Image 1 (cartoon, rainbow, N blue to C red):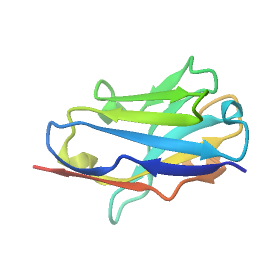
Image 2: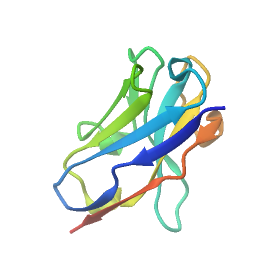
Image 3: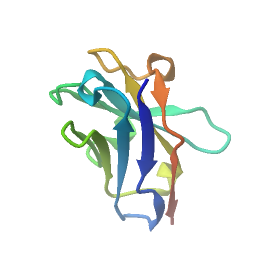
Image 4: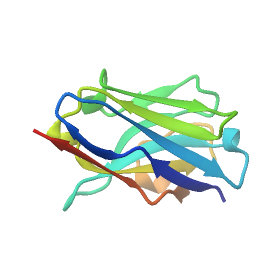
Length: 124
């Protein structure tokens, strides 16, 4: 098992930026594909972005392409989500997830470990 702790959420105006971090502990971080998901009140948890173990491949949901960037630092056991040009519809609790497989996936059931989430609120 790997333990995940998110940070960096907050309140920001539309058009602003935030950088989320997810610190991992407990197992070899580089063995895990990492993902970011989000969940707005009353809605299902949805895929946001994912990154492969080797950093060579990244994946995004269409609505965040060009605005969000996922990255990881295996030496620091941390994955990041840089969020620019934020919109009110980005408001949600953002969760970090880990998958001990080579290939990232976009569905929640494909991830074995989850953090508790960090709240992002974008005001209009």
